Amino acid sequence: MSFNKQNKPVIAVVGAGPGIGEAVARRFAAEGYVTALLARTEDKLQSMCERLEKDFGQGISRYYLTDLRNEEQVIASFSAIRTELGPVQVLVYNAGARRVNGRAVLDTTTEEFESFTKINLFGAFWSSKCVLPDMLAAGRGTIIFTGATGSLRGMPGLSSFSPGKFGLRSLAQIITREYQSKGIHTAHIIIDGPVDGKLIGGVKRRQWIRDGDKEKLEEVDAYIAQPDDLAQIYWFLHSQPRSSWTQELDVRAQKESMFSKL
Ligand SMILES: NC(=O)c1ccc[n+]([C@@H]2O[C@H](COP(=O)([O-])OP(=O)(O)OC[C@H]3O[C@@H](n4cnc5c(N)ncnc54)[C@H](OP(=O)(O)O)[C@@H]3O)[C@@H](O)[C@H]2O)c1
Image (cartoon, rainbow, N blue to C red):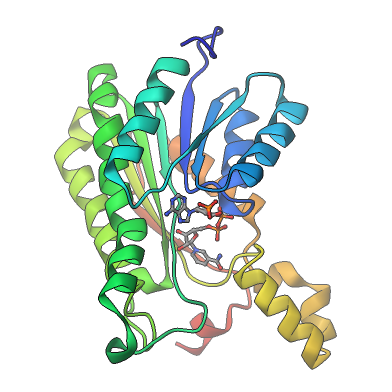
């Protein structure tokens, strides 16, 4: 635990980008957690760690370059986290990947299907296997998976996304049924609509600017989920008393259009 001398509790944010990932890391850092950030892009990870350290103190964050499609890299990163920071108490598996412009089944290659499914599902399986032994030894731990609308509904164009997300939901239920009685709280969050990040949020904003849709631009938070608001939910789930654990919840912005059409 060479980098966690004060023996602070450890959260691993797997799939840490500037949207939900960073917001969750910041929310837990504010509660005194040391944050291990896992993703592939070093400069983004470095900037997130710098922002965390600036706001929450030296040593509050470390990053671990990992391609979640590769089991050996996942194991190596969690082994380094254990050595440098200590056992993980909270695992947030946030990585997810999809095409912005979807493709039908017949146009989806095996490579694409495999690559996205590894990010959406396999990485969560491998990460959970890395943290569960220490959590079980401690008799407590929290595992939270980030889901999406595609976790519940197969829609045209999502052939390389939804199957992995459906599987992730099932994995959350299985871990709950296998390990909840041993102190492990596992939760699956269905984010049913766009998030205000660079990719999907950015596409939406550009579309509204093109359409001159002032109302939406003026009240973005009514239409797109805000990462900081979502991060509160991750903290809420983790801090629930054990008499009242949530296994799954869904969330969407007030005026999310797909939901309101159902
Ligand atoms: N954004 C939305 O509109 C939206 C809507 C509903 C649900 N969700 C769910 O929310 C989660 C993502 O949250 P976010 O959109 O706010 O993203 P984010 O937290 O800003 O970033 C997620 C990070 O995951 C990392 N990642 C992707 N593939 C990876 C891989 N193979 N290995 C390691 N890291 C990888 C990426 O970093 P690198 O590229 O550096 O690896 C990316 O920056 C996903 O589970 C997604 O399905 C998002």
